[in-house]
Image 1: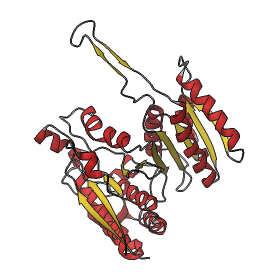
Image 2 (image 1 turned 180 degrees about the vertical axis):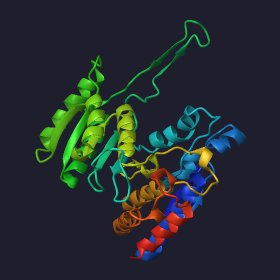
Image 3 (image 1 turned 180 degrees about the horizontal axis):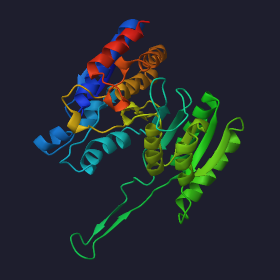
Image 4 (image 1 turned 90 degrees about the vertical axis):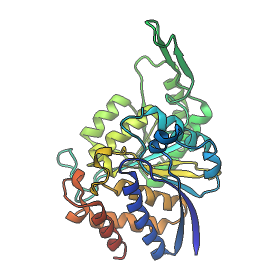
Length: 353
């Protein structure tokens, strides 16, 4: 039987609940499609930070290095600044393992209501390809004169031609595979160096992909179009900052942040990739048994596809489509009353259909 070693970081808040639920569904998929997931649990996150002062141990990357994939739950805590888990866990993993592609799908399923009027299930189906290793979220900069009236902060956006070429080439290949259009997100007002380079690289690569239709939008225009006509989009490539904003808006127009998956990919597979939902830990819902596990499950399906188990991925996505039109698939954030365990049971039943 095929086997894969998966490092599991359940995270905080509702994380252990949704991760546990997703693992049950993925294990059932393994039984049906003939593979085994060997889970190794790491109790890293803000809970560990509050106990020990570190989100992840110093040798964390070494402990993850030999796994086939990382399955990540939501991380965060109301008393811990967001930068702590970002700098202590997420950024070290993304950059240490060259996970330069942040893949963020948005899809409106049958049975889920979009806040956009007159949009039906299946009509929203696009992917934001977000640059995940440099751009506006680089660590170049600092603060001066802390705590004084002269205090200042500088954060440099670092755009390199190799970094832009690799993320855009990934987006072009994905658009070619999907047979759709590739939209480039740019910020134009007053940005005179980084975005012109972005445009130059995009235009140059477009000549190598004459079969891929391309369009260029300002980030402001894209945000408006995501609300007015989300059906028109297929693949969107964006920088770290712009891609994060647009992907979250894509999740919102698709019905719920609880449905939003993501994958931080090392496309060359020299290092493990990481998969997890985009929603936060929702501490107020922890322990109530009503958390939406579907973003975690969908992230797990993306993980299986990355591991080469495409049929199992397609089976889980088909199960999602079967379950969501019914009340047992709708948790409170989707307008229903189903509990987390009910959703898991419904999904596992639908896997066998």
